Length: 265
Length: 265
Image (cartoon, rainbow over all chains, first blue to last red; front, side, top):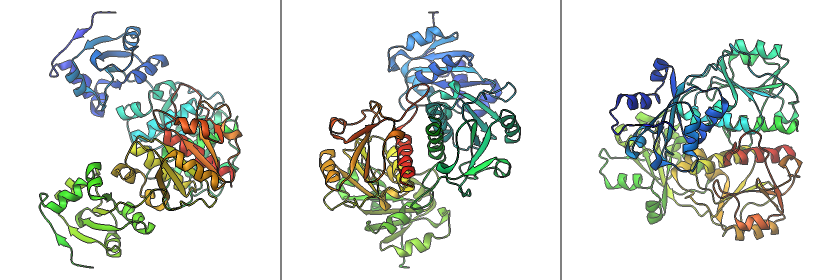
């Protein structure tokens, strides 16, 4: 392993830069972002999509045994900091001693997304980073390979998206674009767009969710866009018993993705 | 409406008492608890299980139009406080101007729980208040009426349970008890206990989840207890594609509860 740079003062310019990447404005300015945690960095590395810049490390914070191995496998400048400095830069309650920075990857639709037959998910106008992260993590579990984040009301590289996705933001084929660009792409690839909305009369378990299916969900507060509300191939709803508002967006998406998996078993 | 008491200083003893109920030790000492939010208080009131003590109110924080109506429907002492005091006592980022205190209700197994045929849920050893709250909210949506919280590693009346349950902690029949007390009760009422564990060979969608079913989930970190691991009637698993740990407890429980609803449609 290369000899790491040791920095002991939080007022160092490099550390200020790294810590600043938790803020969107700084990510936009530098075109880099902040990845915290062994699992998240390991998945970013495994995806082969991420070009690393720095690895910030604090051996006194390690929770596992493979941290050094992961660090040596990554081509990046290593910086060693003491625990109290690491905790200041960390985004977590219980930091695990690893933070990386990396160049923002291209998640646009400019290169062809993976539309080879596996079901795909479309999330429109999502507002809450924690919801998007949980949805990605669940998509991975349900065997989805491609997730389109259409017209989001958040930044995909918000540390909370990365954390709640447990790094599946990198292992899935995640793409950001406009819904009006995406639908023609899905149609061309032979996918049926099936929008989930409480207004639909057909319950999800009566729908045919086999084959090339694109499940479409609207935002937490506003639901589907006018475009998806009028231009989807089919519409289904998720029944709710009891009092209103019983399911949040991530839960609804998880239940539907597993129904797709069940029907395609 | 009765004339409310006005208090303008946070150092007032009554306000300190109310604010203190966010801590478990104070709830145990006084046998009362803290309910924040219009929706949560409204559902506590509707459940007819909750004996209110105080309503703390800040009209400048109201987000809706029916707050005064709710307050007058509740038999409790009303305290009016200014915005900056309310925000100090509140547990939320965006408080909505209503906090109540109430006597801790009896959620033990001493009175007979509702076991009249609807599916029931058993959550063992749950650790995270947000998970339990989300599970309760989803249980309500999936038409479950009874939820057993067996040997929890948290306090049921943690403000975060109440908040993430959106008040369904009160509208559902929620009971706390020991797993070894609960299983005989379920058996006597004709329920089959079906434990969900990654060790099970049978996938959930091949299982028969119709009729008197008790779905059993273990804790986030430790899984099922030895008791549930050996004494359940059946065992099923939830398939996971891709990398490991793709589903959290609340998501797994939500997917399974909706499969029960689907099979019983």
